Length: 385
Ligand SMILES: *Cc1c(COP(=O)(O)O)cnc(C)c1O
Image (tube, rainbow, N blue to C red; front, top):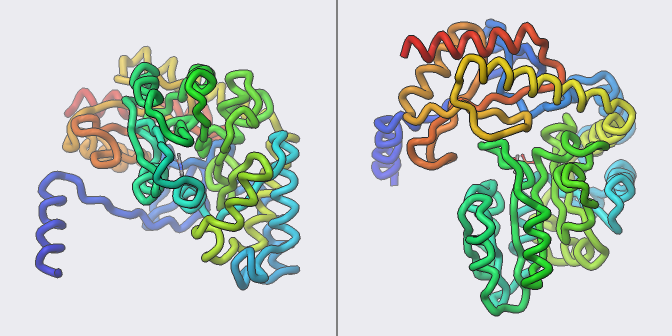
């Protein structure tokens, strides 16, 4: 075992694919401290800057005072607190769906949905670029799984022609490594034509997109309830942690009864649910955060286009700069680090071969001056390498 693992590690090293962690000594913000140095942070999913918002901190502290630190048990035993329950009801009301169900993480939510609701007579049809948790859930499911070319509706349509009991189209609302959107209106049309259901993973859309922050469906002028299964997380725009699935009563009750990643795990601490509730409230009371983020995205794109950076077709907070080789991506990302900017290099297997990239994420709290500094630094490093 050990020698096999040693050789896999060596191989990964030789391919410039080794991953490393940074150890932060500060909270998540546009500036972070790592190993005693300060960095401008362009890698966080804290899109609205809520992870350090005083209202979330206060809600979390109050709930900790009342409930202590741990939830103590799974939801079905005695871990389901008032904070969890209120959060579920507030989500259902906000989204206009019958019910919502909390999961301890987005990975577990996706895994739970795909492994518990479908059997061997069913078919899951997934976008090639879907998040790893959807792909792994699909692999572990009893249902058959097919994957269509990214956002390619004719590829999807071909796969929907199979005769099975239930067909479920599954897509990220906003794709996590490319920042583009799934064409949800077209998918719903195909769903109508081929009697296929739709599941949307809106981890990067919820809170950010749409007039009121209801996510990618709202962005397209659709109700969140037009997806049969709507899933999103609290760890990104909501500044907290955990996830939920929303939909009709039958969906939610089936998950409560059958989803093993719901049943056999400890509920997130009540203080975390309280922070998510505060985040959900701020979505509604501070809509200017979404506008600030949109302004920052537009400003970044304008500067990056003027500097002729190889952007990808994204209008969201996820702005990849496509560099190609792992080596170049690492060099530019390392050079940015030396200049005091944190921008992660994303390499295979997270993205396809030869599509290594910088993955820039913008937040509402970035300043114009910080964005200028980012674009100037990348432009310089690109010229040097
Ligand atoms: C982050 C993410 C998840 C996983 O959510 P966690 O709560 O971090 O486990 C699932 N899907 C997508 C698209 C994501 O970006």
